[in-house]
Length: 150
Ligand code: ZN
Image 1 (tube, helix red, strand yellow):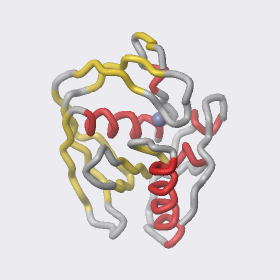
Image 2 (tube, protein in one colour):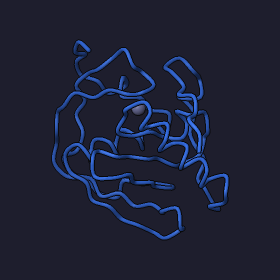
Image 3 (cartoon, helix red, strand yellow):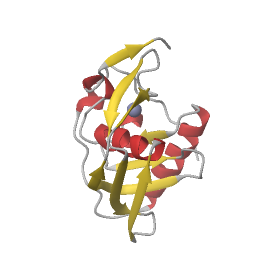
Image 4 (cartoon, helix red, strand yellow):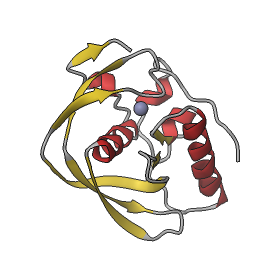
C-alpha cells in the first residue's frame, strides 16, 4: 500500500472522463487500497481515481462507518434535496454550498467483482454524488451556489 499524490485544481486530468473497469486485476486492487490510504492520510471522506491521476471509474468513501470501495459506480435513483457545505481534497483552499440529493441509490461492483447496491442519505449521499462527479470530470466548484470561508 502506498500514499499517492493528490492532483490539485488546474491539473487537466481532473477534467477528463474516466473509463469503465472491465476486469478487477491486481492493479485495480492495489489502486483501491492506495486510494483508501491516501484518503485517510489526507483526512478526507472520499476520493476518486482521477484525483490520484488514474482515469478509471473507481471511488472510495468513508463517512465514519468504514471504507466503501465502488467500481463503475452509478447513481440509479435519487430523492430529496440537501443544501450543505462541501469541500474537495483537490481544491483544498475552497469550500462552498452545493445542492445534492438527500438520498441516492448507487450501483456498482465491489473488489470481488460482485454487483452491489448501496443507499445513502445525508453526508453519505453527498459523498457518493461528489465522487461520482469526479469520474466525469465534474468538480464541486461547477455546482457551487455560494462560497464560504474555510
Ligand atoms: Zn473532490
